[in-house]
Image 1 (cartoon, helix red, strand yellow):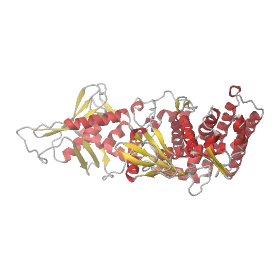
Image 2 (cartoon, rainbow, N blue to C red):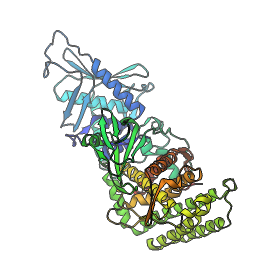
Image 3 (cartoon, helix red, strand yellow):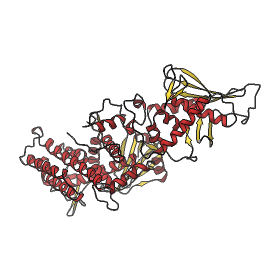
Image 4 (cartoon, rainbow, N blue to C red):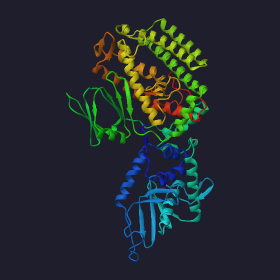
Amino acid sequence: MQSPRFTAPHANADLLPVRMCNELVYCERLFHLEHVQGIFVDSADTINGRAEHERAEGRGRRRRSSKSPDLPPWPDVPRTLEVVSNDWGVRGKIDFIEVEDDQVTVVEAKHGKAPKPGPQQWRGMTLPEGAWPADTAQLGLYMAMLREYGLGAHEGRIFYRASRTTVTIAWTSALETFLHAVLRRAREVGQLATPPEPLRDSPKCPGCSLHEVCLPDEHYALREHEPPKRRLPVARDDRYVVHVTTPGSKLCKDGNALRIETRDGEPTRVLLKDVSHVSIFGPSQITAQTFAGLLREGIGVSHHTTTGTLLGVSHPLATRNVGLRRAQYRTADAEDKCLDIARALVLAKLRNQRTVLRRQARPASGVEDLSIPEAIARMKLSSRWAKRATTLDVLRGYEGEGARTYFSTLPLVLPDSWRGDLNGRTRRPPRDRVNALLSFAYALLTREAIAAIGRVGLDPMLGFFHSMIPGRPALALDIIEPFRPAWSDTAVLRLIGTGGIEHDDFTVNPSAVYLSDAGRRKLINAHERRAREQTRHPRFEYRMSYRRILELEVRVLGKYLLDELDEYVPLWTR
């Protein structure tokens, strides 16, 4: 999935864009996501539509009659026209107009097909035949604004490219009544703190660019505790994270690309369209122009120490969905609901840890140790007690007990040459090689969570399970709990088990163990392989990457915070 972009406030922010009126009639939830929350995701249709509008603008035609060469109020009417109406409370850009004699005609070109013959309906109102209601609203508002300017806009035309059909819409009192109803409804939906319910089984959803944000079928599947009846197409995000690990590197903007210069090697050039995020480790430089260009493209930048500790994340302006963050703050103050979320996260984490041990202990892996089943049984007991915990402190105690059992057993699934390199879980600083790998992997995972939380519009600093300490992203740490074993631990175990990393890829001193530059690159590659790995989602039963699942989990949490869902169940692996 392509990352959502968030629209910047307009100079006339109090005026409603005409395009948003089109979205409102098409789907009120889409209107709320785009207009109220400011989320926009490009799709093939939106990209093609922009290109077609640009081509139409370039070859637009204007016709005048010799009887009326100087039609007021403009002696020369442009091909495209930006219009504003305080009376109607809207603004927009007309892509194509024709002027002949004393008449001005608005022409709208649409990418899809015209509807089947017959009158169209919207909220009980009968609309002109031949055009979709959303397109009628857009064309009608353009006509209304031109009429306000004193021009004779008595009709407009809509051309549907896919069906090669042209529909003429006349200005009537019924059309004017419809337009006022659209604007009234837009103001009502714009005041809602939460978006309207998703459409159910609607044919509109597969063609919507925001269906991966809206999650219409997943929404009802979670409510009804059954898999979705259909699977909407999920676009693959083929962009990748750029990791800058060589100290002294310099990042510059080179046209539409990012250029990375190192002290010793040849510069590396990466097209911005192929980049989803930039992670900088250690002392490196990034120019102000590059920073601004990345943010403009919706690309965040994370800053790490050489050892992987996350210092901070620079990202584009957050979504305008203040209602979601207010719901997050209210939930954090509600002890019962906060405990429900924390308990669900802990149970999912313990279950996923048991799955890791169970998979690694299979005969095919060459590991058969009697203590592994015993550890799994003890962790299952910790899960039972965690399910009954009545306070966060008690829950944290059971989570810690399960974690101690897990990490004390984990050396048994390592190759013989690595079993002495893990002695329990140690951090800040790590005291052995495996802990150095785990700490670095968890830092990468935390960055992934902060980026996903930012795209959804939540506050990464306010969590429900982790206590709030200044400078600690509590919600990000909450979100990654079920993903630590499923993503990071699995990536580390595979890297060690396949010989992808050697003992020489570490810097060892009496007080700490850290990865070398070569070791960091190897672990980053293992993390990225796991991030892109496709797996079947246990609740939705279709395949997606772990990176996509992480963002999906944040969106599901957002639905629960807004009371769209009655229960929050994080990811668990089979």
